[in-house]
Length: 168
Image 1 (tube, rainbow, N blue to C red):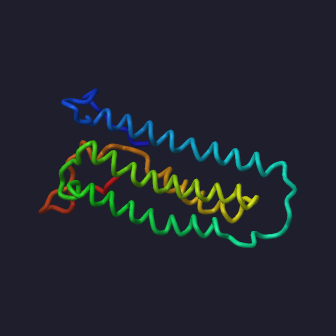
Image 2: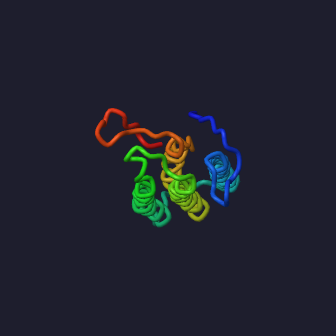
Image 3: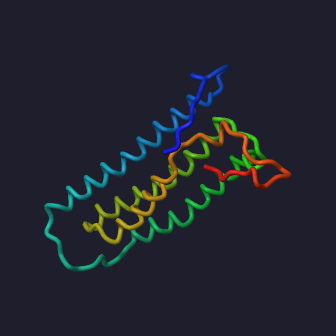
């Protein structure tokens, strides 16, 4: 994982510093990483003692709701983060509060979609098909760890496109 060295420690003048924003982002990311894992363990524990029937889920309402949510809300969250990170495209670092808000938007969208799908496992008393959207949301969530590069590195230039580095 890509970590960056931060010199400043706390917040200055009521504003969020880069170091505290990155620490808060890591704390939030790890917490959101662990919550669906424990919910998945609860689902497996709940389904482990039941007799399984070879009958497919009659009405995949939870599956369709989770897929619909992920198809609509996650791209909207990515778009919103793109709007918040607009100054990064011009080569300027973004403020720590905007970084945290933008990343939390995507993380919350993915997390909530995965939780909807896992709750569908409880309701339908079956892992599949509801586990699939939860796995997809989790895979996208894991790749979006907080690096903080957008807060501290001035990359890119208006005239020279070769200096641009992809947003993370």
